[in-house]
Image (cartoon, rainbow, N blue to C red):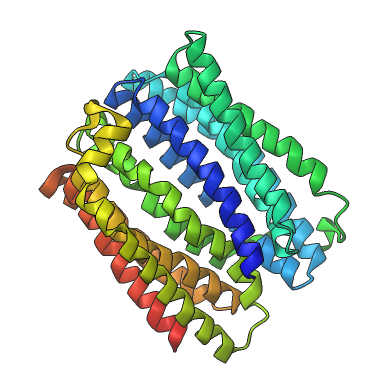
Length: 389
């Protein structure tokens, strides 16, 4: 498991670094309000695609690890169909939102790129469950490098920054889609052997847990709705800098679910204890970055985003808790306790959606960050207790 984790971590780390670089370039090229609009659309569209994904991104690798070939095929089919049906609707809805709020029209391309990416991530669950990290690594590097090159080429040619960024996202996602279709094919099993309704019902607990985890990303559009697009841009500038750090628990979770499916209860508890200790220990390394949060934001994102330092500090404080929640949720799902994870996820999602606007009203963008961190801390504590019992 260590080798597989390191392989996924390195590839996702490099990919996320390229993604962060693209966001930094975009942030320094547009006003804070435009950056806030882009970040809000990415968060909201990404969340809605998770909702309509039926939890297949977690269900497929678990089914593959258990040798349930028909379920794998049926899960992949359900994800492909739901993505194909959802993406056009989101495209129209985003276009309407842009016209009403006078936002950059190019953000509608985010719907297409994220739709392709969500499908790619689900299909990649097959090689990951098989212990193949090379395919996932290549996919991540391909999509992020193509996106960054397209952005830089567009800016060099004088193309609007938002257009360059969103076209780059679409080209990267399309390249990843072609790659995964070439690498993952001729799978055993028959999708028709399992009714679509049955797969959707069995994926329900995974869906709820995944949606609950993704609810964390709704903080940016919530801040935009409660405060202003400019405030959302300032908030997103700090939050997006932290995103690459979440790749460590996300990469670990990708291998923990199929791994824990093969462990007995005692071994799973030992693994949970090691995971919690490792995630919290890594959190100590973030303290210096919390202290110099303001300097880091202004240096990387530019003086336009001055004042976002406290947001970065509080977001970093919540990273260890978010990491613990991610890996323990994956472990519990592998242990067939997905219903428990789903219940905890629903409660935490509701708490997130309720706490962030309250925090924003009371303390501005810093208050929103504090609220998000508090919810993450409580959720991680509950999951830890459940995993160690």
